[in-house]
Structure formats: structure tokens, C-alpha cells
Length: 127
Length: 227
Image 1 (cartoon, rainbow over the protein chains, first blue to last red):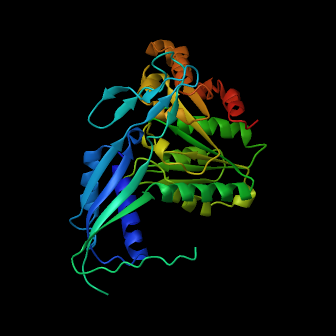
Image 2 (cartoon, rainbow over the protein chains, first blue to last red):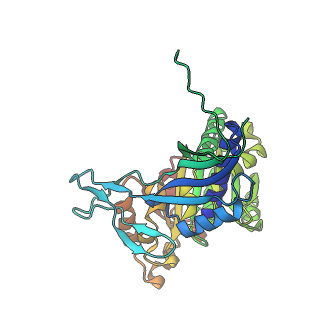
Image 3 (cartoon, rainbow over the protein chains, first blue to last red):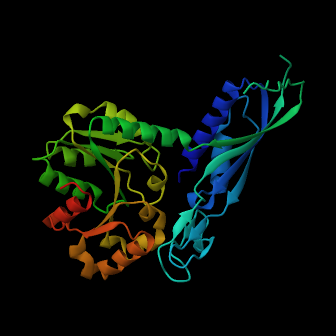
């Protein structure tokens, strides 16, 4: 549901970066790391990005997404691993946030980031 | 320091890979921190009220405002996709309201709150309620800069609201289970909802409310540390 706002931030961040670093040419790829807890539909995010990336620098670039797991950590029994998914539906996954071993409320460790990890671009001209 | 940076010059059509670590949610987080600093500068307490459509967010805010407005100077920022219905309801309490219509978006963000704060006389306020757009998914991901979060759910949404949307409850300070007068008609046991909440977030305070009869409103005020 918030894929469009994320895609907007993504486009803004890329354009800001290009302007700051005086990057000329064409963006070929942007690599994004998305935490599982963000409940983001990757398909919708890619679609939103294609719709928004109309700027000359961005147009035609490919969005490549890597999903990272979220660890739950039980403060009581020390159990630690990727959370269980109660319902893996099309739109989002539903994490169960209690310890599968002893039922205590678990602490989440990571899995909530949305970070651009790499950009690949083709330079257009010598300065 | 002292060491000269390497200068890379590009030749035509050369392909570059640049490793980054750019958080695209940073802009909202930074604006949220700015909002928070501004509210603190004026000594204002702020509460972000979230919950599903029709759970009673507006009714609960109205009920709390009706009890607190004599002792505290309150304003309410009303977020909605469209219309001023909620803002008009709150305005009937005689407190300043700002309507924020998101148009297409399903949540408020820190930038919209920044704009709303600019419309209020902050030096004349002690307390601000921000009613988020009715939605149990997205608002959890966009901090606004408020001190506390209150989630409102109601028994009419059925018994699975907490289990289905744990992220909304994970970071909240208080939860109001509203419309408890309808619990038996709905066949929903509020104690089970309370248990579900404590399993996700044992630190959250839980209150049972019936806004129409003003039941549990004092408890809600206390749970937010406002009394």
C-alpha cells in the first residue's frame, strides 16, 4: 500500500545523489535491500518505480531488490531465528512476533530497512 | 585526513558501480525528528492515534478532549484521505483543528505534519493529537515525530485484528479496545484481544472503552500519562 511513497523516496534519493555528485549519463541498475518486516510487495514497488522513473537519468533503469530476513530474539529463552510467517499472501507477509519455543514476546532484530546498496550507471561524456 | 583522495575520471560509455548505503526512509525519519524537536521546544506533548477504519479514533479523541480541554490547551490534526467530517466533529469541542487530506496516500507522513504544525499557534498549546488515516498497516512505518502512539481497535472488527497486524502493536505505547458494549453481541472477548496484545508488546497499556457512554476514557487518559 505504501509502495508508491517508497518509490517516490527512492527516485528523490537517486536524483539528489546524482545532482550532488554531478553524475552524468544513464542509470542502468539500482540495487535495493528491503527488510522482510517492511511488508513491501516487491512487484508493486518495481511497478511504481517504472512509473516514476521518467527522468532522463533514471529512465530505463532496472530496480533489483534483495529481501533480507528479520530475526526474532527471545529475551527469556534466547531463541533466535528468522520469524515465522503466518500467512504468506500476495501482498504481504504476517510475522508472528512471539517466541515459537516459549511464547514470550520477542524482540525484533533488523528486517525493517529500505536501503540503496549499489547503483550502476553509464557515463555519457568526458568533462 | 592528509591523504589525497583518488580522482576518478569517466570515459565515454564506461560503466560504474558505486556502493552506497542510502536509507530511503531517512527523509521521513529526519523530518519526524525535526517535528519532535519543534514540539519539545514549545513544551507540547503529542500523541499519534492510529487504528483501522471505523474503530473509533475520532470518537476517542473527542471524548478525551472533552475531559481535558478545561485543564490543557489542545489541538487536533486530523488525517484522512478526503473530507473534513472528522475535523468538524472534533471542532465541535471548540479546540483548534487542522485537516490534512492525503488524497491518495494511506498514511500521514512527517512532511504533512510539519505543514500542519505551521498552521497552529504552538505557543498556545500543551497537547496535540494527530489522528492518522484509518489503516492498520502503513502508518506504523512512517513515524511523525509524536511522543506516544495510541492504537484504537474495536470489537466490531472481530477477534483477529491484533494477530493479523502485529507490527502496528509492536511499537505502540497504548491500545484502546473500543465499543466494548458490543462485545457479547459480536461474540468477541476483549480479554483475548488483550492477551494477543501482551504477546506482541507486553509494555503497551491496554484500556477498554465505550466512547458513546464515556466508559474507560479516564483510564485512556491515564494510560497516555496525560492526567
